[in-house]
Image (cartoon, rainbow, N blue to C red; front, side, top):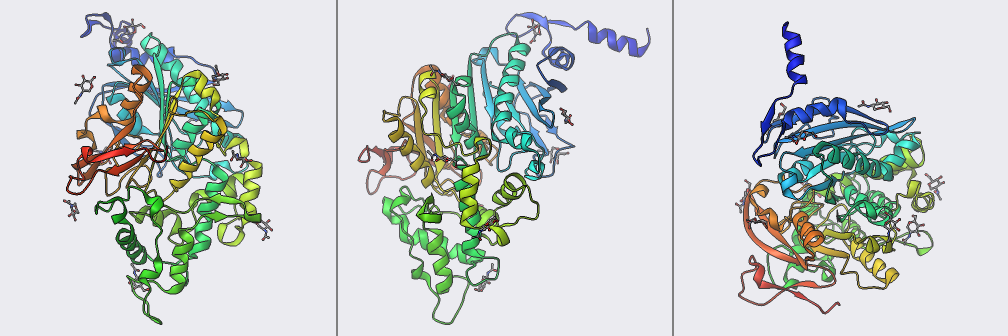
Length: 537
Ligand SMILES: *[C@@H]1O[C@H](CO)[C@@H](O)[C@H](O)[C@H]1NC(C)=O
Ligand SMILES: *[C@@H]1O[C@H](CO)[C@@H](O)[C@H](O)[C@H]1NC(C)=O
Ligand SMILES: *[C@@H]1O[C@H](CO)[C@@H](O)[C@H](O)[C@H]1NC(C)=O
Ligand SMILES: *[C@@H]1O[C@H](CO)[C@@H](O)[C@H](O)[C@H]1NC(C)=O
Ligand SMILES: *[C@@H]1O[C@H](CO)[C@@H](O)[C@H](O)[C@H]1NC(C)=O
Ligand SMILES: *[C@@H]1O[C@H](CO)[C@@H](O)[C@H](O)[C@H]1NC(C)=O
Ligand SMILES: *[C@@H]1O[C@H](CO)[C@@H](O)[C@H](O)[C@H]1NC(C)=O
Ligand SMILES: *[C@@H]1O[C@H](CO)[C@@H](O)[C@H](O)[C@H]1NC(C)=O
Ligand SMILES: *[C@@H]1O[C@H](CO)[C@@H](O)[C@H](O)[C@H]1NC(C)=O
């Protein structure tokens, strides 16, 4: 027998082994590689089916430079990559990470979300999911790379981005998981942050029957108003060097000022604002002496910029567009992305490549308040994702957990309070049985912060030290407790991670309860020093 023939003969006659649970059958590795030829779904082409061992460095040599280039596998698993055609001019890449221990770990399905302008798979969250025994699926939102360029004159690609990729990836992903394990999925979960938060709310609003539990973090929904607000930050700061602009030293001075003015309010001096709604920064406190400038003081014009930055945005005819920025506890991410004197690349990309289909359209020359109204009135394929009637979700028994960092420098968490209360008014029923919202003090956009920000949610696990934290307290496993055990989390435990080490933890109460310090002398880093106050109920 020639070598090649021997090779194919070995492939065809898969070795029969007895696995750890005593079941006999073909090996997991063999079953995985077989998917390349055996798995079939409508409009779907399998591109890759590959066994990956725990600890392996999975690299993506052809990935777009704006996307992850590798992920370290956290489980022995089968990686399946598929191309799903969604129209004659669009397609979605879907991947499934299917761990060896699945049947014994609850037979759970996890759909992961995306960030910014999409275009990159959530490999990190998929790996995190497999470490907890989930079969985890992700997708590219229907285009490659964190850019809006593929939207240009391609409405089908925009439609994938808005909702269809989420729908299709869920359908095909579940089919692949059921097929691979020859066992049906027991419960389906979703988790995502930012754009992924909007995707979660899209599911909650439009196809809740597909999931049992949805975690929507720091959601980028109410899209037209959010993008208008982000674009308008450029109007407020102006470009670098203009009198209205603040450099990073100035923002650091504002940061110190906010801590000085507001940290005392919650009773603990820890650089964490437990109730930023009570914080009303006063930039006049750090004015430079008349006629001078400096790196830790502001000119009157710059102080005016800071006032606008901390004020709600209103549009044409006084229409409310978006709440003020969070009194920030960290300034760096937002400075890099949307108030450092360069227009938000997300707003810019959406306007030029999706809304106006005109690459020459740019925020500095062309943005005005009418653009926000126009974007809202067009509401391409329903991107606003702001429906406040969650009756279908409630009646399907689906649970929704939303959380948002109170130090978010990209999407003001004040908006999420408004959304929760809009749902409360619209449905006029107690939301607790199906929808809970947890404000997370100190957390910036999705992750990092100077306080108890780590909750085991989307895009968080890769931060140094996170993998040492008990995953039973992660928001994902708390959702499992709610869906499968009927235990609804009244609060989420957040950990303070400093240089890879846990420096305390604190419960974050669900809104409208408030996390309140019990009193002088108690250790603020101990969860028992805080309580959930009900004065807002
Ligand atoms: C491989 O697939 C076969 C057929 O679906 C199944 O009976 C067997 O249990 C699988 N083996 C493993 C190790 O997953
Ligand atoms: C994984 O491989 C890539 C590409 O070779 C490399 O850049 C990266 O540093 C590796 N990651 C780890 C953690 O070894
Ligand atoms: C996916 O399929 C479409 C056709 O529907 C094709 O245009 C596209 O190049 C394919 N993508 C990949 C990565 O194979
Ligand atoms: C469950 O959700 C689906 C949408 O996913 C909706 O069509 C259906 O009416 C809902 N079921 C109930 C009982 O409301
Ligand atoms: C910011 O501007 C001030 C003058 O207004 C200057 O003293 C300082 O060095 C600048 N800082 C940076 C980081 O550019
Ligand atoms: C506002 O912007 C739009 C799109 O850039 C433009 O067509 C319109 O003329 C502008 N309106 C005003 C009043 O400048
Ligand atoms: C949601 O957004 C759409 C489009 O921007 C708008 O027409 C609608 O009034 C908004 N609904 C709510 C409840 O805010
Ligand atoms: C986490 O929960 C599982 C299942 O309830 C339990 O077996 C395990 O001991 C828990 N882990 C810790 C660190 O408490
Ligand atoms: C964390 O690391 C940074 C940079 O190495 C250092 O400046 C800081 O003091 C460290 N913080 C603690 C609490 O160890």
